[in-house]
Image 1 (cartoon, rainbow, N blue to C red):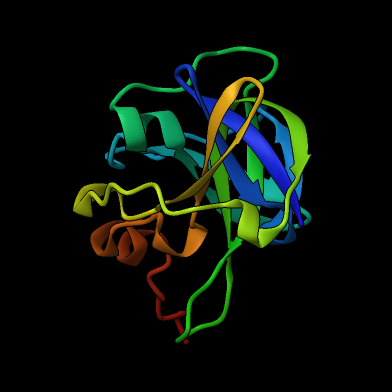
Image 2: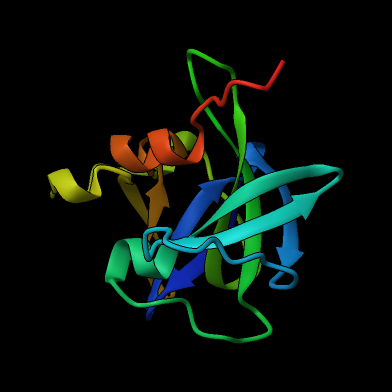
Length: 154
């Protein structure tokens, strides 16, 4: 399997590349007034708006650094009720990929309810890499806020 690597702070994480739709530069984000701090804004991708979550803010309580390697990773966020939604993930140092078998990742041995999106780990010469489970990334209130269905006026 192919994984897209990125960093939050100094730690490395991996996303299953099969969930990735596109990797975009950090440009053109529309701010959303009164949105929670983890919501970086909206991006426009092929005619559709997609909410963007700042993974640094969500995971570490501080926004992602403003670097050229900070990118928006568009993924399919699964929703069993309405089907997948486009979701942008703002992440730092989105510059590498990694090929690993599913079995190369082992349980981390630590389970934190507030960070249930942290998956198993693998290692390379530079240290541990932890997988992010996209389907567990958004707390239910944030998921409801981002993907709320609005009634269209008649």
